[in-house]
Image 1: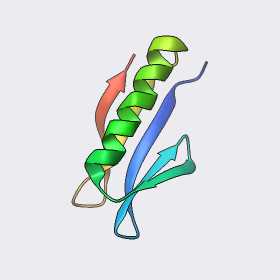
Image 2: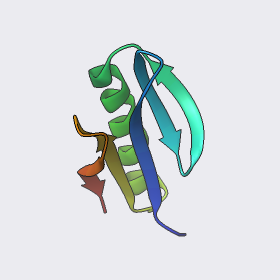
Image 3: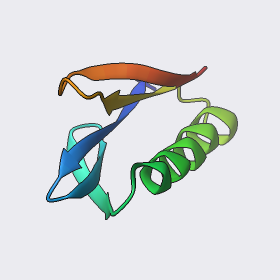
Image 4: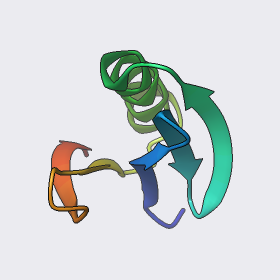
Length: 70
């Protein structure tokens, strides 16, 4: 299986979780989005053996790696 990428980007005053390029969920708070992203990434890596990384938009609007699940 190819690796998976989850991205958290600012969207309409909250945070959008993008799953492999497809918008999936919207959250009011960044920490809420991060918690769900970690659950998804951990499940993919642990149960389906899909390496998954989480990238989040920083204050400069750039995506940076925040977690990686082998």
